[in-house]
Image (tube, one colour):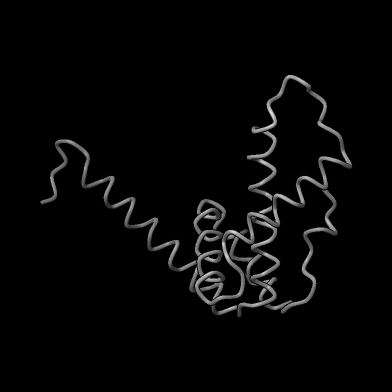
Length: 134
């Protein structure tokens, strides 16, 4: 898969820079940030979740035809697809985020992911057997 297939066509450099910065600073919750941005793009009608996955599939099929099946013929196609598809979907989310969303939208998605992570952490602590909360 070439990088040219996944680079932003157009868009706001400030939004792209903000997204890169936030992903770098919050790498532990990157998947949640991507999910929030994908949902935001979908709910605002910029692009559907299905369209992103279909486009990622087309990119991977094109790359597979160019690159061949890979080095290990015994490695299952689904394994390559899962890793490749995730990376392709993330790259497309980055591209469409830069194209359609603002830096403030990125910040809101990051804050939402952080709040969800804190809530999960508190829930895990609350579910520890024998923990006293006095």
